[in-house]
Length: 237
Ligand SMILES: [Zn+2]
Image (cartoon, rainbow, N blue to C red):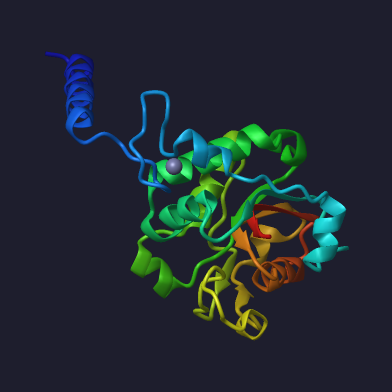
């Protein structure tokens, strides 16, 4: 039997197994845990309709997050709100590495914002770095996963070694931490040659006060890029 036929048979068996399991263990909504019907995936219709898109224009975003004169474009897709489906999806993606949640978030991002139009001129993509200890513990950096997805869409390289995170700070979505104090001097340029004279797209997942993002952008800026733009998954409303 050739390899293609074996692969086809494995896919068939897998699909049958999934359908069989769905009869006894129907998939449930990630957020409200209700059984999903055939037309629903990951979220039920009600939770899906509770995903709120960010509505700030780019200039307002730059002003609010202190990035005027530092960045060219600044786009955010969702409003992040505790207890709502967006929090569930982002937490599943960010802390558990749930691929389906990440895929849904990225699919919706690409449907909602024409990133090709905005970022077709960029040279490289830099995901918000994660401290090596945090990455080792989680096994992944969610911003890197997002960056790889965007890199594929735009056909641009993802650079993970240009900037490093030197201090291990608490997550921006952890409530009650002193975020401003926590981010001073966190990032360092590791390889300025990667950034120099290039148009850089920085990718982050959730922004709160933006201190982390601002510090990361300022660190990139020190390495003399030609331009910087920013793409964020969600902003805390
Ligand atoms: Zn639901």
